[in-house]
Length: 326
View 1: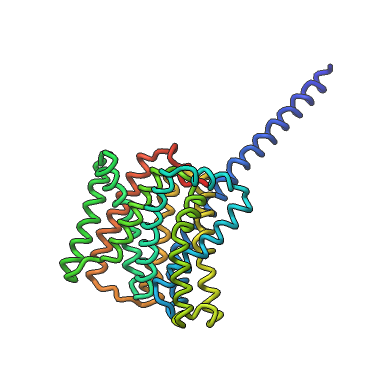
View 2: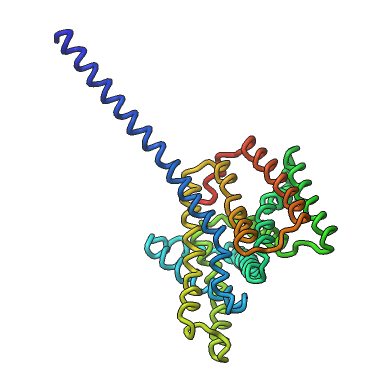
């Protein structure tokens, strides 16, 4: 082989290697980019939920909750059928321990949903955002109390800031932000229960809503039978109610897709998009009261969030990133 031919083959091999590297680099980049987009879609959807519940103010919060349960069950069932994941549900049905756990977690998420809808339609959107800002810090307290986890120094300080904000609100207004605290605590306990049950988010949500579906459907039929429901009478309201299943399930799909592609630290930062959007809606769109005392309360909460996020990024655990995967 001539020298020219030799270098030609070498150059060809180098170009092929370079092309493979570029393709490989692109394939590694795309999952991260798509993961961010999925994450943004999920958390932005959760942040915009107050605007959705506001469309159903003609109905009482408990009726909205029951429709959310029923239509979420229907929509998630359709997704599981499309993805051919019936075996997951069968395994859960054969496990009494998981069924009992999902009964408890289902009750917790139903309470969380009810309080959230009630708060939004009572013009307390800003308070709901406070609840989801402090939720990660409630998780830290639960980890300490129930799992024997130790606080880091920054976690201690972040929790201290959150508690200070709540105490300041109590002193300034003479009352605790009960909507926000209830949302934070119920969601934290829900996460704790789901962590112990170890089932996928979608199949778990299906079983939770399936367990609650009979009483929820019974209440809807009771209201319709007594003429106290606008469902099927007001077409617009009826469509909003049916759509509650979609706005509950789709963000969960997007979140699971993001969790498979992103580091846990990235998810931990993106999660604050939801309460931030809700805060903006409450203050600037729905013109809810936001006094200097509210600013001080949120100032403490935001300081805690900043320190918590800083600690989270410094001591992230990449092996946990798959927990939210489908």
